[in-house]
Amino acid sequence: MPFSGATGPSEESLWSSRPACREMESKVSEGGLNVTLTIRLLMHGKEVGSIIGKKGETVKKMREESGARINISEGNCPERIVTITGPTDAIFKAFAMIAYKFEEDITNSMSNSTATSKPPVTLRLVVPASQCGSLIGKGGSKIKEIRESTGAQVQVAGDMLPNSTERAVTISGTPDAIIQCVKQICVVMLESPPKGATIPYRPKPASTPVIFAGGQAYTIQGQYAIPHPDQLTKLHQLAMQQTPFTPLGQTTPAFPGEKLPLHSSEEAQNLMGQSSGLDASPPASTHELTIPNDLYRP
Image (cartoon, rainbow, N blue to C red; front, side, top):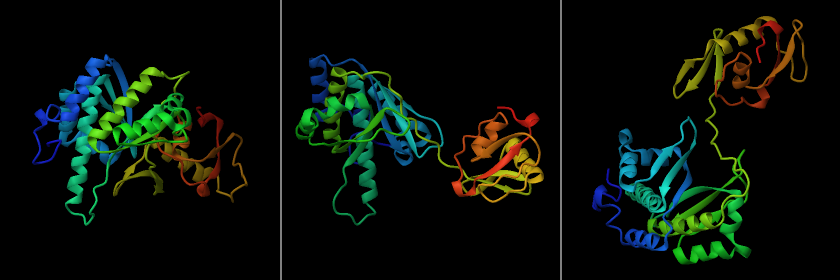
């Protein structure tokens, strides 16, 4: 799968065929900026699938050509973290390949569209919040300078990503503008290291519904109901046999024990010493159960 379209250069010549990329590589070498960096990108599932390619062939080619380490976070998440590590010149090559791949995807999608204007390529960096002030600059001077000198649009999110001390930095523009922009952001990050400990953003797993039927717990995966581990089924059966559900806000213990609110399938399975990785069900379906002491294993 070529990175630059069916009529463009081959994968092997992707980097060397781009004048802006050759110029960037020269500037990096002359400026002595060639140090090892780690840049994190936040991508949606479709974007991740694009850079992975069929049987992982695309990301393998990107790794080989750029010399950068490209790792993609695991998990059934709507968002994934793509981590690019290596010398700065390798990072720029990897960014170029990703940006041109996304531009190719946009071009292909427009072939069946009535749209007349081509949308820009957009990448989202994940940056420690302590470095965002330096990236914005006093009165927004630095980010304005980056926008004007590269032609890319740069936006720094005002809020931190959930359960982290990182912010999303969105870059939009042509692939060449994005590469120039990333270069300048890397300079800022090198000049202004993070302050204090950084809590990295970890995307939350996709919500997986759980249903009970015939005394068995099932999780819904696509169009299929998959039997859930025995612990959750046993907990549900125990609740049905021992504790009648009462209106919300009331409790009717069936026997002495530890009273525990059941908010989600994840918490229920954790009570039995397992981790289901499932998210909470809607609050409207919350019930309170009583679990006997001899079955409770925190």
